[in-house]
Length: 122
Image 1 (cartoon, rainbow, N blue to C red):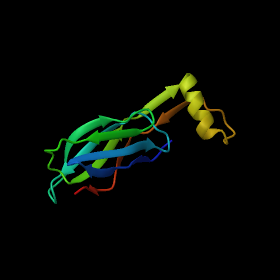
Image 2: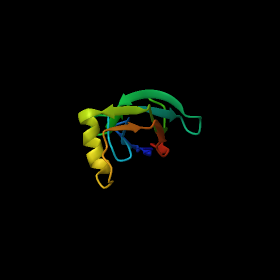
Image 3: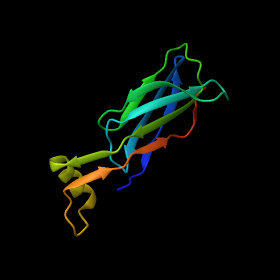
Image 4: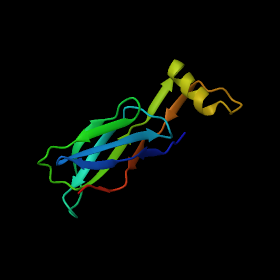
């Protein structure tokens, strides 16, 4: 099964600090995916500068130092292929494929990448 990946990003500035928060998921399922925050000052090319791990609900949050110069941000997530069997597979099979007339005993989730929209914080 190939499920589409998704990552969102929202940025705010308060008291001189930039806070970035968002969600990551694959096909609507959340997991602690590794999210790389890319940033740039103005119109310069984006560069990776921070890696965070989303929590079990797919949420992540980063607060930058006051000295951070970046004003443009993008979150990117990439995950490798996953194979599950047994109880973990039964849970996902029931939730996802219950309408199919064939039993499901294992599953493979394909590798994916996703990028958020470019967010500008002034």
